[in-house]
Image (cartoon, rainbow, N blue to C red):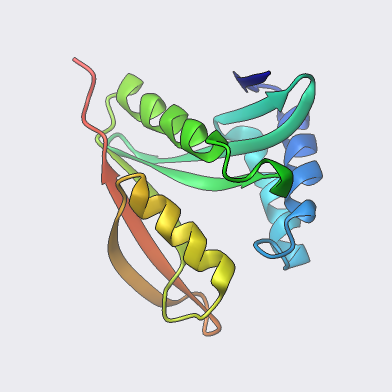
Length: 158
């Protein structure tokens, strides 16, 4: 049975992140990036999807300012793709924004100028979730990984 829980203990966040990202080499193939994510998720809002007691996916949120939060990093084990878990994790992020009076949720992903087929699926997923491409930053990460910033207006809870 799928359950999504907020995780507050920094060590647990890092452990979950470190158990899932290396299992997704098509998206997270740069070891130093994984190390950075594992370290950085500890002080950010973090939600994990569990199947029984097994962590199968997560999302970490980075708050930028009183109006905007970012999907900092997310990953779902491949065996659980295409089962609605990503959608549920994004919805948790949207709720987080609304509950904190934030209007916008952003995400950064690989731009379409890069031919990676896995990130093409990622962009299509975010578009289906209502995100709109805002701007490409060709050198934010490096010249081989152009960054696409996507944004979604989530409204504000009354």
